[in-house]
Amino acid sequence: MNTDQMAAKIREGQGFIAALDQSGGSTPKALRGYGVEDSEWAGDEEMFARIHEMRSRVITSPCFGSGKVIGAILFEKTMDGQVDGKPTTYALKDRGIVPFIKVDQGLADESDGVQLMKPLDKLPALLEKSVGKGMFGTKMRSVIKSANAGGIAAIVEQQFEVGNRIADAGLVPMLEPEYDIHAADRAEGEDMLLAEIMKGLDALPEARTVMLKLSIPVKPGLYAPAIEHPNVLRVVALSGGYSTDDACAHLARNPGMIASFSRGLLQDLRKDQSDAEFDAALGGAIDKIASASCSG
Image (cartoon, rainbow, N blue to C red; front, side, top):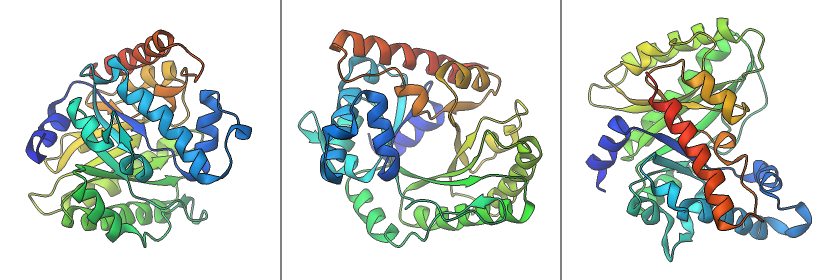
């Protein structure tokens, strides 16, 4: 797939984007969920090798290339690795799956009700490498904890500022100002978030496209204006800690949003499953998430 074909796949594809980008501190938890205990690896290299084994098993499962997964978000080490004897990026493209790369370097301490991204000092080199490896887009996460107008404005401003740098490098940025689903004031804060996002979108150059990755809103259909904005390629939803069933139920009430789930996709996979058991568990999750993404 070339860039235009990948853009069309993301814009028009009937399916969802898989989030396979756990990194750093989140990797041990992901491995435990898969049935790999901390005692089974020592040091970062062994840890990342074990998570790559899991991701490779997911990517090579027949159901992953069924057409219902239209994109996948990778961690840098996964991008640098191989699947099926070829670079991960091209293993995905061979299956009709558009590759994205996680580019943030973690979260800063909370201030004004939000956690901004830490300074992205590795971004220029990572973007150059990602373009060379044939990636289509990027993803970067920051988190909103409460309905603080100043904090929400700051988090959206940072996302768009970095997003423009990414677009200048030739990749499509996926902006992810996640709203903590446990926040008591989330409905109020999501109204503020939408207003700031629309300001940022309206300020973009006419031909510049971005994507948005957002928590499934309290008010169904809240993000319709962003979904319909001419500068938005696609709006995707994160599972935010919901189970697969709960995330799909909430998503189905938001026409135009598609899933970009991690936990909701991988929660029932275990290393000791037979290939048939693994494929059945993964295929069931894929079918459920794809159906919720295509509703409405």
